[in-house]
Image (cartoon, rainbow, N blue to C red; front, side, top):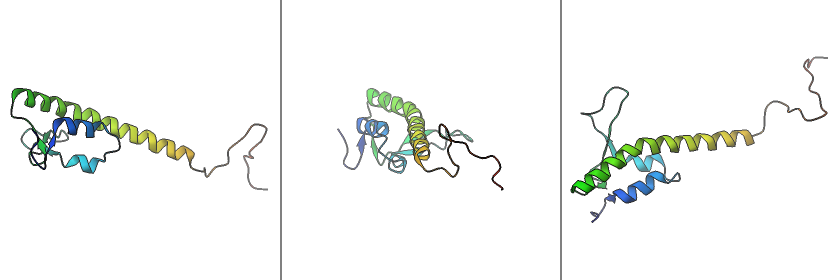
Length: 111
């Protein structure tokens, strides 16, 4: 059962896997666990105001599995975004002339 205003673990898992969902939207479902986190080692926990984690043993196990995979999915999302940004750059016009078959580019531009 989903509490009004909260997202289920299944819905959160789908949103994490969707590259179209932005990081800002996903950030509201997580918070940093200050007790377990260390320097340069943040530990995420579900935001209890936005995520419905069933109080059963199965619900806690699914929640733990989702938290474990959240870091991997975040890395994968950044990787896909990086590839897309790189592809966009290769399509942009270059500042430098491109050599084509049969053409030569002078090394000394002064005449």
